[in-house]
Length: 145
Image (cartoon, rainbow, N blue to C red; front, side, top):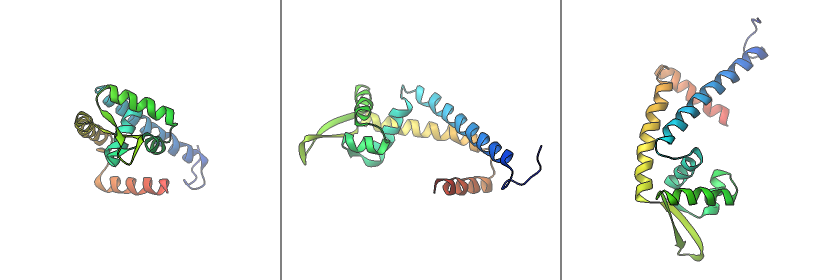
């Protein structure tokens, strides 16, 4: 096994990416299990999060935020509406257009899910010291830039 440093040792780079991938899979699995309790899929959750942040928007705007085809956004909205989590209304600025927003039930569900998901994510990151958590957050922001 090579004893090189992380900057020049490709084995260590593989180890970093494998470790990062394993943590991401663990978080994704916990997320899917959490969402299943409320009969919400990951794609529905993403749409609910966007609607929580933006309050009301056209389906085309939602598809842009989710980076999915407009038809796929319509399917997600249809499924959320069938569950009573979203509603459609005519756009007062353009009656040909439709606006989508959360229902009261959708808002309440989002609060429940957010609190549970936060607790589950905390279990993963609880192993880190406060300083390590700050450093990890900084590193992740750097990787996203």
